[in-house]
Image (cartoon, rainbow, N blue to C red):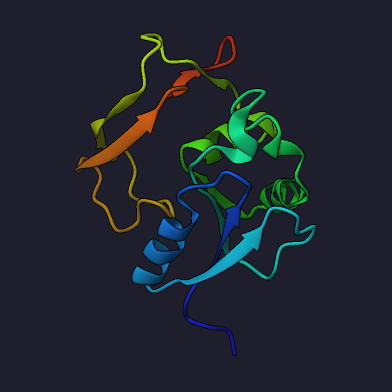
Length: 160
């Protein structure tokens, strides 16, 4: 019999900082949080995957550029292409862009300064797995912290 709890994997790369926070938050939301190590070539049976924030592999080349080559990232690419749900938070979003799962790149902030503040977001749709507990039009206040968080969409793509 299948568990009523969704099984959600959280990937840990060398340099991840928010993986334990993600595991805790998912458990607090009554999900079965499953740790996934960056060297794993196959994902366990999961309903979704979270790539948390931090500085994967030290971000020495470019944010997320080295992590895209990890075995777990390759498994996540296959998982996503097969219709799996994947959430990238902070550095995780950068990794998803570098892996080609999301269009565009995240570049250095225009101010060249580190940003740490709360940002209000409006829920546009409430029919997705990430917004199903929200109401369309609702304002959420989300904390952000980044030095490379300026999203640059490919030419011709509306980032909204």
